[in-house]
Structures are given as C-alpha cells and as structure tokens.
Image (tube, rainbow, N blue to C red; front, side, top):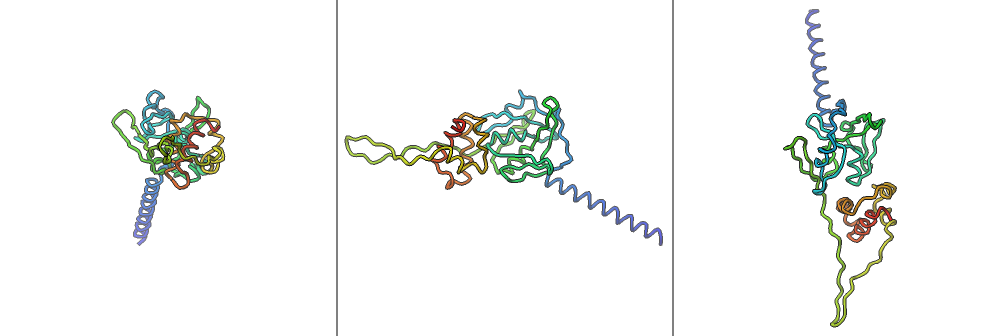
Length: 238
C-alpha cells in the first residue's frame, strides 16, 4: 500500500515536470528564447557585412551578428536605415518601435569591450515580419543575405493647363506649406526632428523612406506633401 502511494506520487511529479517543460518550450518557440546569449565573437567582419543587407537593391551599413543559423542586426543601425524611432527598455528587456513593443524574447544585448558599451541586437527576419516589410532571404553564401523591398516612389509632375494658340502653358500652382511645419504635423509622431537635423542623409536614402511613410496612409500624406517632406529631409531639415 505504501509503495503504491509512493509510485503514484512519483508518477504525478514526473507528469507535472514534463508538462511544465513542454509549456516552457512552447512559450520560447513562440516568443523567442530570452536565455540565448549572443557572443561578441560572432559579429560579422565589416568587409563581409557590407553586402548582407540591402534596401531597394542598395547595400546598407549595419553591425551584423550571425549565430545559431540566425542573422541579427544592431537595433540602432536598422532603425536609422528604415527611418524609424526605436528605444530599449532596460527594465523589461524589450524594444519599442514607433511606440509598439517588439517581442521581449527577441531582444539581445552584447557587450562590446572595445567601445565600452552594450549593443542591442534584433533578429532580422523576425523584425521584418513584425514591421510587415517585404524581403527576400538567401542562404547560398557564407552568411545569409536579406533584400528589403519598399514601395517605389516617383515625384509628381506639374499638371498642364489648356492653352490657346500662340500662348505658352504654365503648370498649376498650389499653396506650398512651410516644410518644417508640414514635417512636424505629418511625421513628428513617429520621427525625431532633432535626429533629422543632426544626421542628414542624401536624397537617395530618404527616397526609400518617404514612400513607406506615405504608403501607410496616402490620404494623410499626399504626393505633393511627400515631395516637400523628401526635399526637407534631404536638406537635413532646412
């Protein structure tokens, strides 16, 4: 009788432990395994990393790390590349992107002793899925390559007016809003104006960012406004 009770208790304990381990595994598979520690030695050398990540066919520079068949990117670098606002919550070990929380189980800190600071890394594929960006992943080389695709962008052309014989036509002219006021009104909720003025980029860079902003809500940012914003950002907020 006593042995039967011991056997029953043992079986209950085994089942309980097994169920607990199964649930933990399921949670980690869905939210990422926060116990994973990224190793500094797995950071991809700069000369090899320059062609791993491309935006609309153009290579972009970012600190990359490859470990356990997963490609990671420096959070600050990818936010700058995509024109997004990101921030790391140290207490929660989570990362906020334009006010939305990216999975806490997929945010990793790596200590860079040479720079005397920690760098936050995010898994590239999971991040692009979270942002709902189109991408192409290839695993043919030493490291995976990721091509990020955004909406194409074309500058609007003036609308010609009907003309009488012997006269020249002029395009329609609409009131032009102040660039800084327009940017503040349309974009300041998601973008930091101080970063734009301190970290100016060429027009080719912003021409991949502005269309993404507009594609989210074409009625909120019109073609004309997108043109003004593009010129404003390309000039470093001047």
